[in-house]
Length: 391
Length: 216
Image (cartoon, rainbow over all chains, first blue to last red; front, side, top):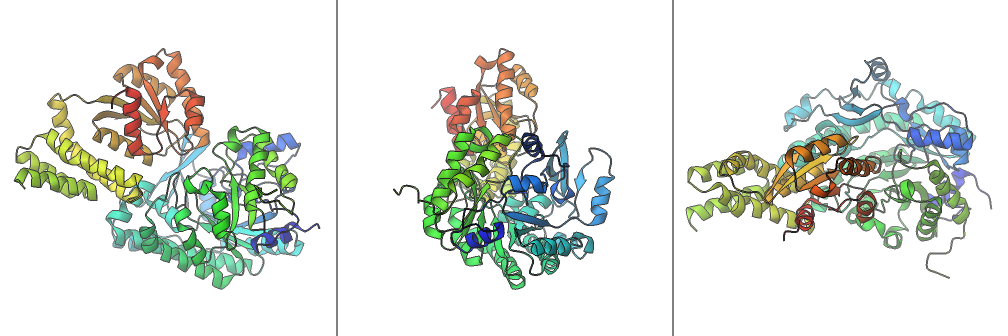
């Protein structure tokens, strides 16, 4: 049985087995590859293609993979992204070298070493009142240049009908945007010290996200299979905030946002959330999340793939699971293959799993290991897959 | 309860609940009432922070509550610290801390600093994006017992090995214990870079520091 990549993905997210476990590489930052390993990959493969960046955004540093590389990596998805407004792209393209990168939200990144940018420009760092939320010059999400390209790109992919279309507007995530506006520790403190302000800020950001998401989904029409959103909620050990605080403040915001999306598209909702989020997975299911990413196996209880599969495998599709803390950067290609096999044999049976690295493939990952990861899917990911531990 | 006990109890509560203004106020009030700075520190603030650390480890509180408690402690410490230094009270050790070059993540590092200071260490924080040479210079200049290096990314965790190599080349490795911390850090990394230990969170950082220094 040979299926198209799109059929393969649609089967997986419907919890059905296909010809093999799908591969999600490239197409978004969280499933992407940084420029340095991408260049090494191209050299190793003898592929000549330009160095392009996701979102046309060099400071993010994540490569927009060329089609030949995507085919070699067996990626079963193709991406559609939004863009910052044309005037913001132009302003940043023409700013003095090494000056801070400022986005349409007014937050931005500072270059701490040549070519290394971190989000350090936080325009609301000192805000603590609801009035300051109301007074802030929030970005215009109706600027048509943000999504002008979306309908054409999605229609082209849909006409081709070969790959699943995964749409990822950049960081329409309320909590992470609040971190960007205030600084992470400042906003976490405000959640405890000034909950009315924190909640108002999150709702305001979510409202802006919804406006852009509405335009983005309208431009996509039916030409989308997966829509990616998220918010990092976990740490290495546990959650950033208590389950009670999540349920009181952030969950209603996420739930409303997901409802908004589901009212406008049949696409599956892909939710990216780093760290150990084990205590919130029932909440994710309840809110209508279809696909959970990145399954950070190095963080707390997320290492317990058997339990994840047993408890939520019939309702959630897992995407990710290939460790980027140790295996991909420092493992041998054989260790990478063994880990991919292990993860596939736990999460793969019955569908509901798509292979991807746990977050972006960073500069320390050898290109050989990226190839080992995807080649192992061809080797061990063909259905039927024997459940790990069974004969 | 005496007035003294009542005030120490209040200060304990304000640090625990992360109310920086009230913690500062109670500290000032305590000093006006002739309560010794060391009593405010050791009988109120430190027990409060230890309790927050305990609750964090058991999952009763999370980052927001831990951060505001640390913030309240820091607020009160700005008043207490000069008095303690002036009184010539010995700290239990000197700790140089920094986020390695190429990395700016410092939420965990800040929490470690407060917990360490609360446990009686003198903490010298070199900040974020700290070049390897700055760690070497700091070891020469302030002669710490322990150096702590933090990295959030696997790519910047490569700096641990480079920095330890620099410290070795400078002939200073025997003079300090080196602890590492941050998301990608585990015992495998400790062994591979030649550090003396790691801690997964701020309260265990205190325990690990005492362990490598050989104090209980």
